[in-house]
Image: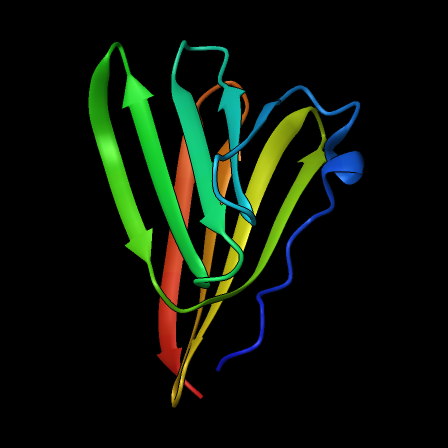
Length: 115
């Protein structure tokens, strides 16, 4: 059985301008942030399964949907007035980093590279 991925404690998210909703299943948490342009980004993780789901809505339309099964670490932080969702992944010989920044607008960077 694989190790649990590293995720933020819910208490670490207190004070951030995000909505935190624990799921019905243990280890499942959704965190939502709103951009100034009205975009909404929700990051949901399943600590036990090591999976992540990211959904970005802009004007009620889905702009991006990401499913990641190999997540090893999640970070949610505030940096210069914007929320940053960081997802690290490890799939054998591949390592990845997905970064979603939510501020005035939403920006996404995703890299998956050989180690």
